[in-house]
Amino acid sequence: MRLTRIAAVAVVAALALGAAACGGDDDKSSSNKFPAGSTMAKLADAGKIKIGTKFDQPLFGLKGLDGKPAGFDVEIAKILTKELGIKDDNIEWVESPSKVREDYIQQDKVSLVVATYTINDARKEKVSFAGPYFTAGQDILVRKDDDSISGPESFQAGDKKVCSVTGSTPAKNIEQYLKDKTAQLVLFDVYSKCLDALKAKQVDAITTDNVILSGFQSQNPDAVKLLGQPFTREPYGIGVKKDDKQFRDWINDVLEAAFKDGRYKTAWDATLGTNVKMPTALTVQRY
Image (cartoon, rainbow, N blue to C red; front, side, top):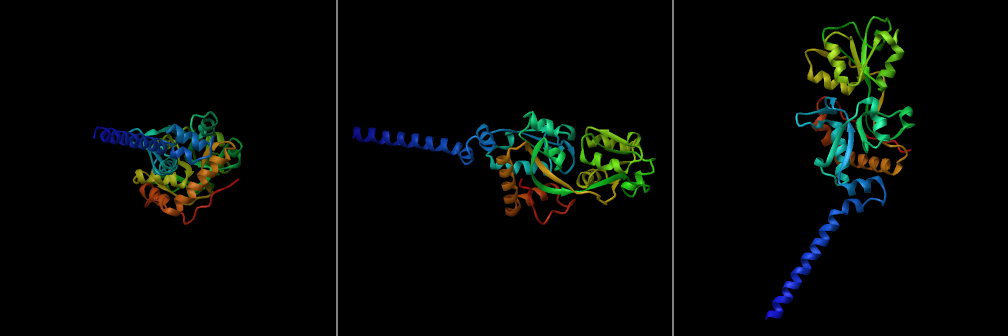
């Protein structure tokens, strides 16, 4: 009888050890599904990640009362982190204004940047991009009672000031429409300062992507208005370390899968929803 009990205890102990071992395998399952040495495997093993995004852009990346950003860019990033097996609490959000995005990637201050980040050839020389996951268009925001600006051509007379952000694509694009760049173009590090300057009548307009400006308009409907005449195409990509093709291809795979299975739409509805029309297709760049 005693031997039977001892045998039973031994069986239970063996089962417990087996269960513990299986539990350990489950804990590592996220990293095991990625190629050894890949960025994905390293991040999954670490169980944490630093992601660059904006903190001042309604609908895409706006810092909330809890100190964390919220918006479409944030939700896109979370789709990726869930695939890596990283919990939301283990994401460190790093504010990444336009002028520092490439620097932060190159200096390993972040593993990726999702921050209304337009893909262009100049930036591709410094970092690589997955996506685009959305294509915006540059537009103009003015005060609600100002009908003197109808498009970028309105700045050619030289008597209007326009605000944008240092190091941004919109700042570069608007220069061709200015009579005197030094006198007319006002640059800040973040767009929220442009909004303050517009309200205070220190500038006559803000120019950046239409979806960003739409967010400002939705928060200030009695103070500002969007012209609604985009004059460029701005494909938003996810910035990663230069030539990390394996990581970039993996992100593109996840983006395509998320668009097909509804995760993209869920992120869209929770953030951009009624403000912007969702794209009907997603075509990523593979290079």
